[in-house]
Length: 227
Image 1: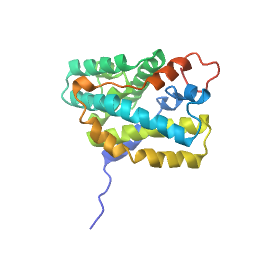
Image 2: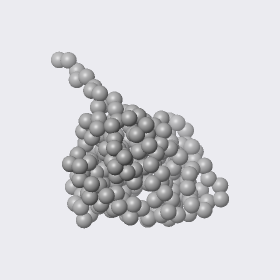
Image 3: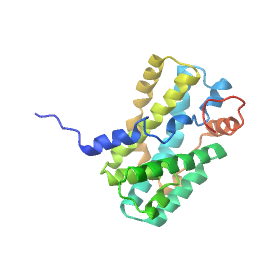
């Protein structure tokens, strides 16, 4: 039996989640840099615990549900729903640093989509530039990337960027980084399933340690990552 050949949407997804995508995702640590300086994260085990907590209490309950809702709203051209979930995501970011990250990454991704000319009107660009999730949902609709694949790709992109930050900052060896990704990625399929069960009124995050670390990172004396 002939193996299934990857389609063009598969390759477009790889491009969308690639670390080489020029939107600056690698410049943020989302509080991890301060957590490492204070000793909350100090080795592969504690970094894995940090990431797993964020996975289950932010990615599963906030980012993936909003990504799914934005994907549907963009597919149905529902501007009011796009605006609603954009505002919900922004309001759910507890620190100035995290809110600025949403805006900066959104504008960078929207600018890239415009420059590679995927056929967007100025109104559409304005709708999605509020955050990266909206831009990803728009690109996925334009490129016929399925919602399940988009969710999987988004999780992998998050995990890869967070692991790279940890490897640099703890520091960890490259092999430890690969071990960490192998371990955490085992939880990703169930994380996607769980995200589909989140109801509208349940969309939100509860990661107080990350919020504290992010707020303290805003004034951290020396830092490698953007604030």
